[in-house]
Amino acid sequence: MKRAAKYEASKSAAKKEHAKERKKRKREAELLGPDAPAKQVARTIDNTREADDTMLEADDEEVAADEEVDEFASYFKGTPPKVMISTNKAPSVMLHNFIADMQVVE
Image (cartoon, rainbow, N blue to C red; front, side, top):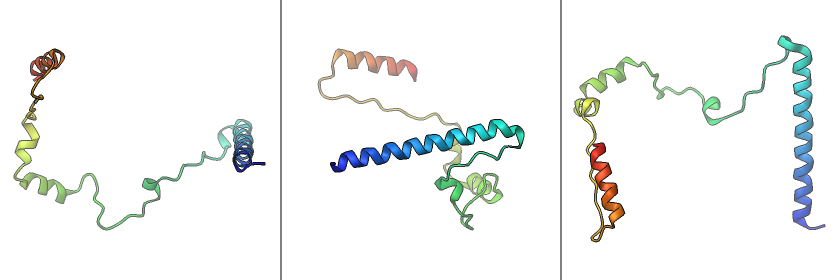
């Protein structure tokens, strides 16, 4: 038996086992109703991250004060962004139409 065929067989067996366990958990949840165990939470980088002193909260007073003192704060709060549209030396008709549409959007 070739290596690829063995690998395929082992993946297929693992997939069947996983499906069997999933069906078993679903059946148990249906039988127990509201007393069923909670669903397993997938482990991700975010939910396994340990709290660190350097991490900031969303409503941190110090960060809000720093943003108010920031010299660019007024620019980023209300000024709409500037858009520069450039072309190559010989733009096509379709590109001219696109540029005209983009100028109307601004």
